[in-house]
Each structure stands twice: as C-alpha cells, then as structure tokens.
Image (cartoon, rainbow, N blue to C red; front, side, top):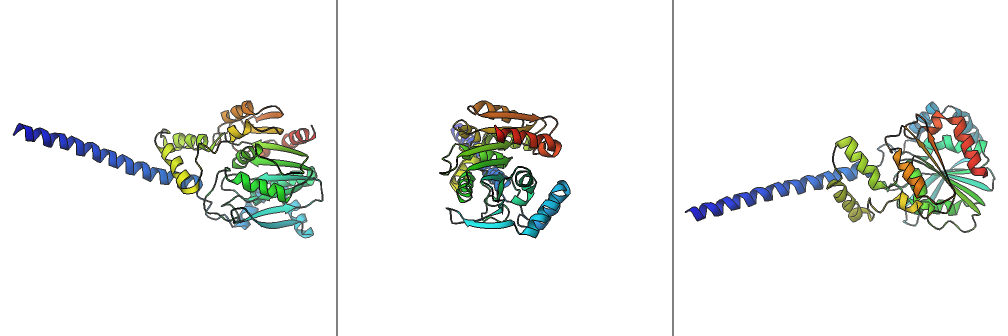
Length: 315
C-alpha cells in the first residue's frame, strides 16, 4: 500500500513539474511572437504621406519653402525600382545635376518624407543630389516586416548603384544609422571614387537594442525571451538578432565615418556610440551633443550640425 502511495506521489510531482514546464514553454513562445511583432511590425498608416508632410513642416518649418520650390520645378521625384527580392521599393530623388550624391536613410517606422529636413541641407546648402529610400516595409515600399537594417543593407547598396556618382555620402539616423554601418563593410559600387558615412544615433546591434527594450520597458531579462525571439526571426525571416550587428560590420569598414549621438539618448543608449567609435578603424570622428535626446541632435544644434558636416565632407 505504501509503495502505491509513493508511486502516485512521485507521479504527482512529475505531472506538476511537467505542467509548469508546459506553461513556461507556452508563455515563452507567446512572448516571442509578441516581441517579434513589436520589433518588426510596420507603422499602421505608413503610406499616408500627407500626415508626414504636415509633421515635417511643423517640426522643420524651413523645409516648406524648399519643398514648394522643388515641386514647382518638378524636381522632387518619386522613384520606384524592383529590388533583387522582386519587391517594388520607393525613394524620393532630387537631381541637382551634381557629381555628388547623398543617400539619406530614415529611422525605424519612419519614411522618406520625414527626412526631407536632412535632404534640404545636402541639396540646398551643400550642393548634392539627394536620394531618400523608403526601407522595406516602410513608406511606399513593399514588404510586411521590418528588417532592422540587416537585409536592408543590400537594398541600400542597390540604391547606391542606381544613383552612383563620383562622390557619395550615406547619412543614416537611428535604424538608418545602423543600416549605414551594416552596409559600410560591403563592396561599394564600382566607379565611386569617394564615399563617406554619417551615423546619427545608430545602434550597435539588433540584439543590443531590443535587449535594452526588454529590460527597460518590460523589466525582463534577456534569457530566455531574446534567444527564442531571435530564433523565431531566423526561422520566419532568415536572419537573427545576433547576426544583425552594426558593430561587427564597423570593424571592417575602411571608409571615413562621422558618429553623432545625443548624450541624453535612452532609446538608443549613448554608451553604444562609444563602443562603435572604438570598434571603427581609422578615418573616424565623434560628436556627442549635450542634452540631445534620440535623433534630436540636428533640431537642437542646427548650425553646428551643418558646420560639422561641412568639415567632415571637406577633409
């Protein structure tokens, strides 16, 4: 009789532990899908450029007259190309007839229109042609999941090839900054004589960025959710959070790079820029802006921002 009780008791413990494990597995899988959706879902109203222009003119009023002038001259053009993936992607293009072209890379869940304030600097004040692509799953470009810059680096290299000129500049902000770093180690289009990169508040890696979000917004440790989410991303979309590393790419970059970061940035923590700067071989500059939060360095220091660009481009 006692033996039977012991067996039932041991089975009870087994079933109890198994039930807990099953619950943990289900919660982890559910959490992984939630985390991946949080990270990679596009902006719901991403194609509504009317709202984007309204917000642009409110935040950067100096862009209104410039955009109006381009529209009158019909030189602000919507350009669509088919990527290697077969998807149709969009960019805004301003042809100034220059031998210099700036490619401006926008941030997470933003679009090309949002970054016309930087386009104005390069076209109106620095004499560059300007290309502002909509990333995969952003703006008017096709795609249903954000790629955080990793696969986007190939799309951006295709834009460089399409609009290549003697001198080129890639200027990325936030996710765009990470993308600029991710593409900087790859082979540049043949025929480009001088190419430089400006990285404004870019993250070290997708893993680091969302590990921070998991801790700061949800008070959760990296294990196990980051690992399962990264694995799920690999299974569903072919890339993992670990491999999508800007800092590893920067280690192989031989082109000049200017790093800009606000010292009050918590969205992409400021400490990341110091690690990126340290990892980059020679031909590098660093400007940490006092009191600037995420992607606010230009808005807070407009004149100095322009002067820093001029110095970097003229070296």
